[in-house]
Length: 465
Ligand code: ADP
Ligand code: MG
Image 1 (cartoon, helix red, strand yellow):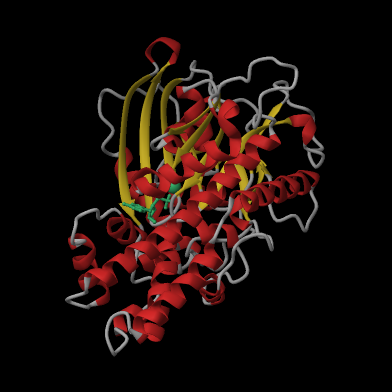
Image 2: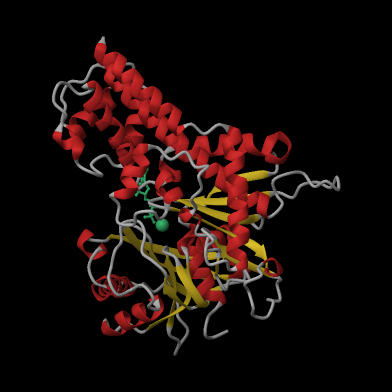
């Protein structure tokens, strides 16, 4: 009974500190809009970097030819080739391969990482079949999706600002990532030119637009989180170049680094941040994305184990190990709807090492997963809402004209596979928008849109015009 009382006290405190009432989400969205504006002005203290992508035209459907793409984002990277057939034939053929990055390369040297990538790419190029056609005398071209913050200097060059998501490699920050890749390709004897360097959000936006012309923004919910959207070029005070003909510019918000005293930051978040590779940074990302959700749950369960002997008299040592509880496992536990929570029980056995857990302990565990996932999903929805506010698609026009159909392309393993998470994002967005506006807004899964998007942007920026 005493244990139960103590568990209840911890849970109550967790519920309180993770709460995201709708009014709070509105305040967070307003704070994000203000930070976006600061970023667009070039304020060096702005939390949202609002990076200029140099993409001022999104794919039209006319793209033609063979193009490659390489997507380096989190734990995996993907290589892809696509034969584009123009307006009539669209994507004629597409092939991809996924390669996981050995963990030691994520914290090794720049050269090792890029050599590994270029080698995998060269191998993939070696398997190109007859049904892919490169015109005589042409060099193969590549769109490089690189999902880390980059100060872009042109469509095909940019320097790394910082590593995130568990990458920590000396000597890459400040370097041009396209030259790093090009040199590695040369070392592999691979004759290929990267004609577009894009963030995964920008790639997803491009891929999404190719599929649906009403796409205005893209959001990634995967290992990390980020968003890009189409801005009016004249609403970017820091842009000093010529105004693009289209009048538009795609902005990579880098919203993962958002932080605000409005964010419901608990003791668990603070401790996780403190012990992370990048303390004080990517606070919004750490509350939302796949790399961290399971870890937050682990920390809460550990507290329950300590304070309320949730898993018996001794605290299971495995539970003390950071990142032992991964978000896909959390998702599996959360989705267990069996009467005895059997899946959840066996997950606890595998991960925490406790063989028989009572039904009550399993319910508590599921409840913790629910609290952490719901907070993340609701905060993500507030972010999407802030972009809609920024571009004036958050409400029906006051002129009385109809609100244009507005599509957000979403991608990332978290959004794709964690159903309760994605439904909560959508429900919260509907709630924030209200009935009328939400009927014009569609959240659409753009599965692996970023790879094809990068290939499309490589095509529209081809050296052969
Ligand atoms: P990245 O963000 O690294 O480019 P993905 O978009 O594929 O790659 O996202 C991978 C992330 O998605 C994983 O780190 C994991 O956190 C999350 N994820 C993958 N599968 C699931 C799942 N079944 N349930 C919850 N989260 C998942
Ligand atoms: Mg990715």
